[in-house]
Image 1: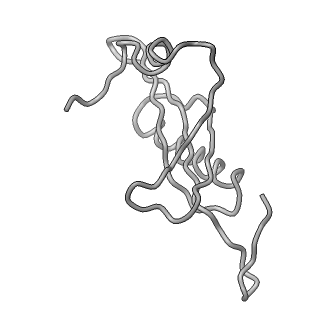
Image 2: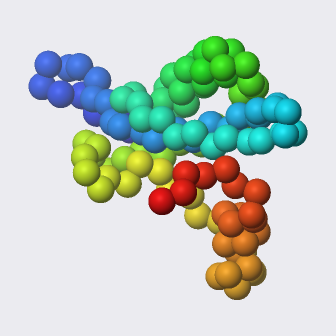
Length: 114
């Protein structure tokens, strides 16, 4: 990323959403958590380094493992209500319902119910 500097010569920072993946071992077996956190940083690499440091602490404090997998997304501005904080495109030949079933609605998700 091209780094911008303000009138005082200070480095500008952008907001980044970083997704990290964790493994939980429970009495019910193995679960995986995808967790997205927000960071202000001068680059995607810096945001991921910050997020991965926090991910290690988060995992250690809660008794599960950080899998060393992080993806970043630069936000288009300052976060606010309705701001997009992460986006990932994936190519697939699957039809829409099959795609959702394969990646998002497998029946094994542990999610809050309305």
